Structures are given as structure tokens and as C-alpha cells.
Length: 178
Image (cartoon, one colour):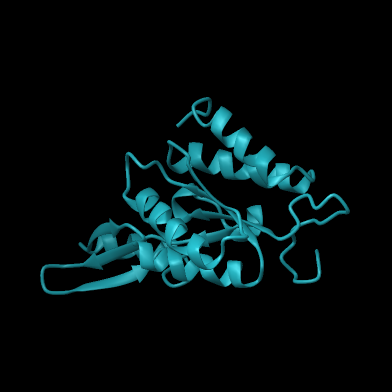
């Protein structure tokens, strides 16, 4: 671990120094597994009378067991994309620390979250022009998306640069099984 406890390796060449890898909960990964930070979609559990909106935080707020029990009891579920202002808030905390960001997003063909992340990046570039904010469309979801996040985490641990990680995702996102 480095000084800030992020678990991101640093070295004299600056490989990954001050870079945070981010993904959404759609990658089916946990932050502890990959060393990434998770930005959760929102989901609604409700019935005909009312609904409860929760952040998809990989089972912290509502365990998978409780989630599926609610479904067995008749609750309906639906998800909602992360909006641009939520991404601005999420990304800002890392940028204020002087960190660069590689955010791998669920397929833009499946969710508007990709567009929200791009809007947030463009808004934040004005306030943090010296920071690299890379937003990549994984062109996938679930297992395929998770495999990309896993591999990028491995590249980080091997000391590869942010540019090398971006290149890997762009060259391999169509080669994973979805």
C-alpha cells in the first residue's frame, strides 16, 4: 500500500502513481477484490403502493439474501442510471486529492451511465485541467465487464501505466465473452 492506503503501487517511473480505477456495480466485482472504487447504479424495490430507492453498493445496504427474499415476496425491481451530477460528486473526491481517473463503464448501449460519465468528465476538465480523466465504454456488462476490470487491476499491480491500461481495454473489449 502507498501512503494514502489506496493499495495502488507507486514507483520512480510514476506508474499508476495517483491513479484511481473506477467501475460500476454492473461489473459484478467488489472493491476489495480488484482494488477499484465502485460507483453504484440505483435500484428501486417497491410494490404497487410505494417504492424504496437504494444505491447498488454490492450488498452493503441490502444483502443479496434480503434482496432476493423481497423479490420472492413480490417486490418488483428496476434500476436507474447514475446521472452526471452523481458522477461529478464521485469523481471530484479523487481529483481533489490530485489523482487521475480511469473509469471503465458498462456498455453505453445498455445504459445511459456512459453518457453521464462523459458529461461529468467534460464538466470537471474545467476545474481540473491538469488531471487525466479517462472514461472507457466497456461495450459489455456483467461477466465480460468484470473480466476487463479484473485484468486492468492486474495491469495496475504489474506497474503498467494508465495509458497502457486504456490501450488494453480499447484493444480487448470486443474479445471477452459476455
